[in-house]
Length: 392
Picture 1 (cartoon, one colour):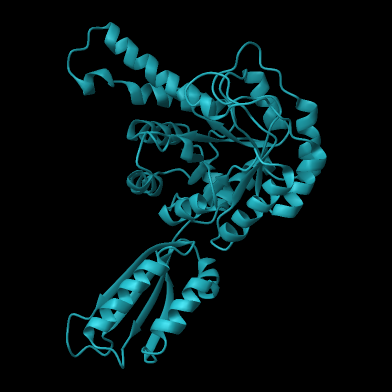
Picture 2: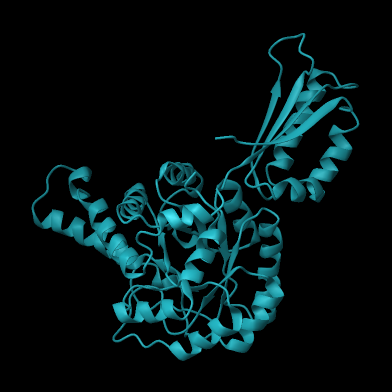
């Protein structure tokens, strides 16, 4: 149950003027620490996986663990794809379990950023998934991953932000007002007047990338002016690295597990500090009361076949698994055959959708229509189709 709709979570935070932490994770140590800190402080939290970090872990292998941690948590959790590279990245993220996505096209000219973002929004909204866009450019300065964000800062303007949101339909907007990816050099200078204008013009949750290095007062002022989601990673990585270095200084000789001892607690301490500073502590129950649970839908078809031998049925099923599993919002495609020979229906499809919205977008998707019309419907006129939601 605590895996909840991310839009509901952030809308609640925006109305009540606090910020939810979107903490990037790169290992199970980070995952456990983030959830531990959220539970200790009774806060909603976003588990964020950045495509720029996929060199460090296998996204497809990590997602089942992330989803399992979210579903067993006692606080509301959302799962976000951060800095996706393309529309295809967003589809993959949704199909693997993310219920929020960001595809970063901010380095393109405005018109192209709008066009690319609009395609992501159309696809993701068809899956019930909210989209974060970015306008302006937030460079990297120093620290882990900063080199992936080269160039000079480009500030978000009110006029472009208004047009971008109107023409794309994004649910949240990441803005550039002076933060950087990685570590700050010197005193951070943020344009709060610009942020306040953007907030008044848009009235949607705003996002800050590059939270490491800001002062407590700066965080509070960001939140006062509509910042509802704060992306945070570098300080967590630094906390983990310091702990490993301390273990080394203490002459650890017990191998890998000795070197990483205490890393989870070090990360959790920094996560909890941020949660309390950003005002999301003790908000879990209020969010759970308002946010919709993020539960899959099972699309079940039982059917009989005429005009195909067994090899033909197996070939049709294999083609269906190949084609249908790539449709946005499809988590899994299962094909089955009755155990007993005298069963009323011999075969089944079980297609798992990430959200009820996929019932319609899947039905109308051209790949599904083409497969059904060419391969399935001509031989399976005897069938029953039902969409199920889990009853708890």
